[in-house]
Length: 417
Image (cartoon, rainbow, N blue to C red; front, side, top):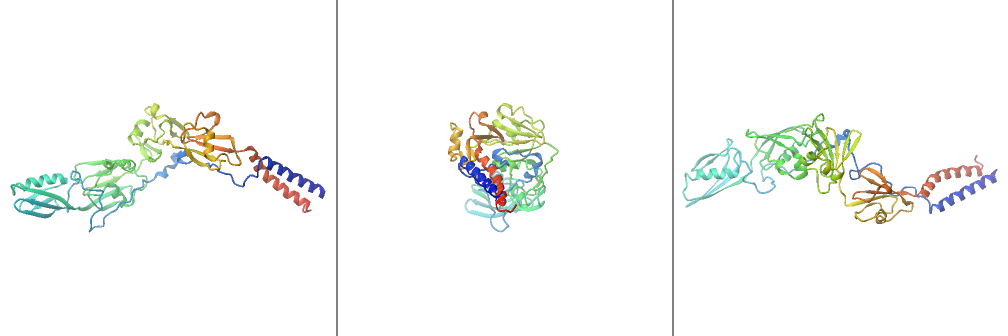
């Protein structure tokens, strides 16, 4: 019995050696370039409605806020047409006639400017440029042949109020050089699904109520949608109503939650929110609606395809690379070349690894997998997956079985069993 066990052990080891020789080497313990199952945004991520919480808040840039005393950080020179004067602004007035007159004047709490030897002028809700014209007319009553200058020496500080979906609603000290985003930052940032496309700014002057789409400022740098603050402004940041017309957009530079108009087409919506760039693959836009995924060619069907509340719109990016992964020597991105073959791309990735097979290749495109017979040519952003050789799979599956069998037979040979 002992001799038979030894013979069986030798035969098993000879079989294992033959299989290993056939496979041209022993399979390593870990796979080379194994493809992860989860999807990345570039390889076809789809955000379901249950994942709304990923887009809870819009990150706000840090803002430098003056604590009083010194100068206030500004974006650049004050625009005389845009800067609205108010109480506590300090102006410097110079008048040249036969002599030079110079005064530092402060706008009163009533919005008036008291000019020595001239009188009082009303500057309420006037721009710096308008104030210059008003002051010039007032100076004509006192001086004949004169020249003058009226400049802004020191910015005023005032209260602006913010309420709604921010961490700390309340009144904050700001200046006329501060924008809406600065006030939101001072209030601790946004919270609880803010609708930043429909922010309301109520002007105390009573002249207007602004509706602001702050997302355009974050995405496009549109400063008209991030206005300067005025004395007594009341900012209301509403909450997104998920029972209303809300969709999710996933794409480079535009990912977030957006409101849609009733019966709004994909074409009209994407143009309205400026979601398309020169790198957007507009011929393969995906709309996830429940368990269904529609692929829409924006040029041909964008005007006909109507969005519904709860849709997720995925805008793929035209990549300048092709990704080669799996059993290759150097998995990763390689440059796209319109005339390159699949074999050429695999060669750029170092060729198949020891256990890779050029005949076991699949291509992943926009989240779907294709065999080589289904692919006419490689496109930007495609993922080439090089599979494992059959012989390597055989060794990998048999190795544990043979090892266990070897242990059992060794036990028999040693008289353990």
